[in-house]
Length: 251
Image (cartoon, rainbow, N blue to C red; front, side, top):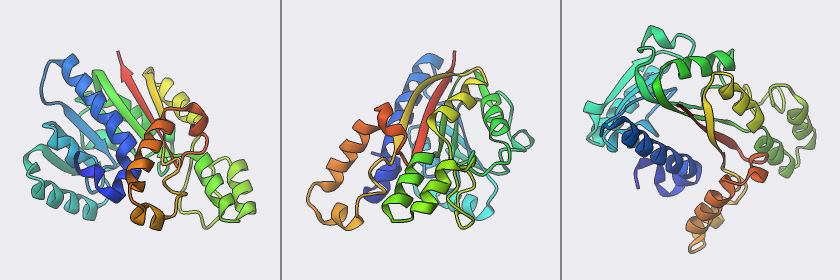
């Protein structure tokens, strides 16, 4: 498979990549075009943008970090897709200062809502960038995964704080500004008029399993990937996932 599925990175991206790849294939058939116009907001160094470009699509990456965009351009060149990847400095708040409104067949909004001042505005801007028929891929930090991780590490007070904090933070030292439940994300998406097609839990087990086991035990990586894929679709595991992925489409 493409870039996201390198051995170690695969545990973090495999579920999202499989869902996204299938969604893009459906959009290709619906649009009647081989190449789609894809917007990746907060796309950074191109973890998804470069693999999407490898599928033949045109990808515009908007990110506030010039260093990340420089790394993206280098990565795209190394992958032979520099002509299909455009790097633009900007952010979700001022999205339409740098890209076209209603100009994209698919929008990736991965790791953005945690950091914006107004998540509802961030979602609205992502949706407004879609064409009349378009697909939104939304990935954000999950509340339950953080609570579980702090509790298993013995930080019970921090786990309780995250569970009761409106932003889902475990304390002042928490590097994550905001976390979400699956219900919160689907409500944000539904409020824009998009139809939620699927919700997946991401990194349900991967962040809890000792790395040495995955790296040294024969077949452990493949078995864990299969387990992650199976658990991702089960609503019961959404509440303990490190990240949550929502796929939504505009009819």
